[in-house]
Length: 193
Image (cartoon, rainbow, N blue to C red; front, side, top):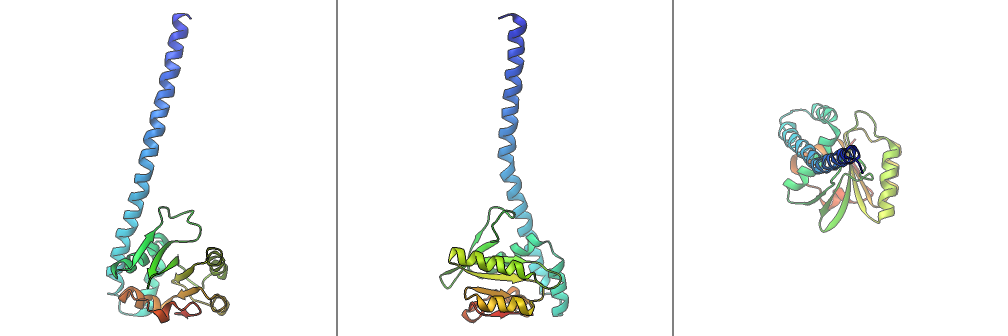
């Protein structure tokens, strides 16, 4: 092998090694960026929680919730449960979560959570997808949203014995007190507007 061939081989190996190091560094930093994003949303959720109860009227409070970032809304609900001493399971990713934004244990029962920040009526298809997911997993679930619950969505919730929908005044009461008593988590109930 000539000197020029050895030099070319050395350069190729050096480039390959540099690429491997770059990939390793990027992989190591990626989870940290995800963690920072979660912390940012959690911090924002705490600020929203502090502010929401200072807004005097229900329509204004709901309008404020409808404007916050959807990921902050997810964290707002999880933060409220945590502050009241409930055991919470957070997802490690906001996207690709399979339709589950977290889980909470109420009276020893695990409930999957779906949080939706709507400006108008809720999308019935979202409730149907969540109900199907609950059925497939044999789980109970709480669908919490900022929109309006139409008749079709109410019928769907009533037909699903493991699904609870919370919105409107019940959502605001929950954010204020953090309580979901047994009556509020009866599967055939829909709470709010």
